[in-house]
Length: 267
Image 1 (spheres, rainbow, N blue to C red):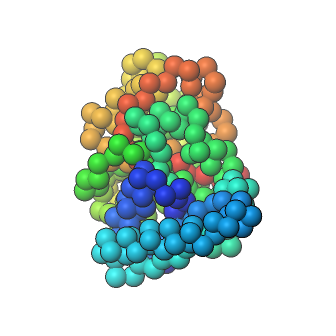
Image 2 (cartoon, rainbow, N blue to C red):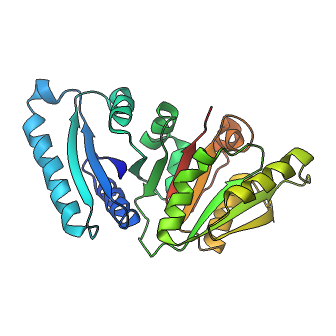
């Protein structure tokens, strides 16, 4: 049984993310927790109306769900989202957080600052899947994992995307963006280990030369390869650190509009 957290502010893009989650996990027995956070709900007397909105959202999701083992629960969190959500994640043993992002693309907003990036900064114990409001849902056929082979991938770190790939029957493309220097012996070992951990699923490895910035290169790959979901592991050093560095953020021009899955690092 999967446990999926769906934070919502009752906006259209939040609802789109909820709908995407229903489609993504259609073949899995899942409990979806539709959560809204409002620390002032009690003092303002809005608790009843907010619970009605939550119930309305769940009724819509039940109506579109084709999963025979989909279950739904609502939660009105009487705290700030970023102050109270981690405890809820632990209590409910959440496997994924799926949330919407506004803007021309999920990645652009993610790196320029948003609720999504605050969630990344606050939560390091659960995969976070961000769905852009511009995303048009299509049958999922291809995932991409972008890496620089500078991190030892634990099996538990990869399990979320591997399970998704197996259940969806999709291909995973592991892409290494070359910045000019050849792989070191250590990176070659990490690459070989990663291949072993991907055994049993449809996957491929590809090395691509960096064109302009690292961010732009990844964006172009997502578009060219017709990727339906981009995944990265949020580790503190190397590749992901470069993407989040202040100097890089200012230069980012992400135009991709595919969902972006951030996998937590095992420390």
